Length: 303
Image 1 (cartoon, rainbow, N blue to C red):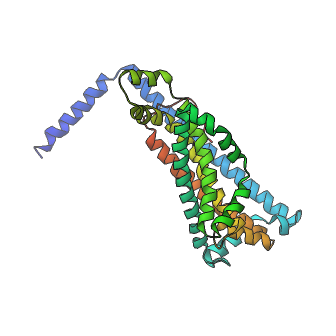
Image 2: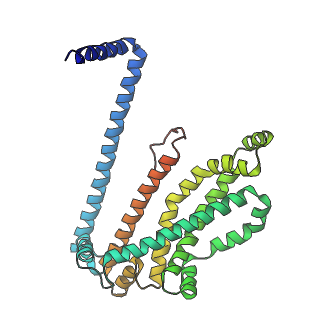
Image 3: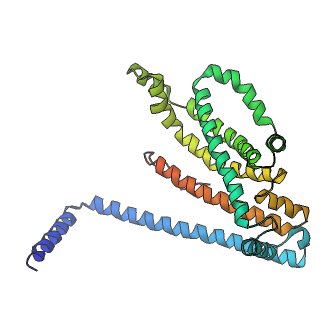
């Protein structure tokens, strides 16, 4: 007890000294920070309340309309969609376990996303830094980007069969163009003065590329990845819809063939939930990789 008393007294004295050293400006700043935090939490609570209220109002109006005014055979209704989801997750689907269908679609989307992102980043930065190559390849890239994706999905099924390869190829194409154009623009937007100063100091092309160009284009690339995974998921589902032996796209195609509107909506909901989870993970990755970036005005206004 004799040893603890001096330590406690010293801590209290240090705390009192720190409090005494605080200026009125420091106290005002602390109060402003606390008030800003409270306002931010209050705004977040209001935003989520409005979101939930909007969803509830939409679902209730849909349920009532489908019960009394519109034909639920064509438009379905939330209760029927809920029952279809419950059946899929408890009893399975006609094609097997729902988890097997989700795993197949997710595997195709992830592989297509990774391959398409790598190709998009590499070629985007390469052509962004080489005006000659970009001039040569520009018309071919624009022509390839103009081809309807559903046509490519049909060709991939013919080329690669009904297996996973055709779906990966479709997802890869959608992701590639989404990432390529952002990486290309990011490489073009690098500050020329910064590059010239690095070269004056003796930096090689490789050092300029890895130390200046790639870090500067990172924010552009990461911004494209948010939409790119959604495109990968769309590519996988479209490929499965065109022709497959499993996957969420197959469930949606089967539901359409049997005029099961609730099944179509249920497949859409599962796909949307997967896309939102991926968006959340990519947002966390972006925040971790861009910790060095100073906060900008309006950062709260995000889509």
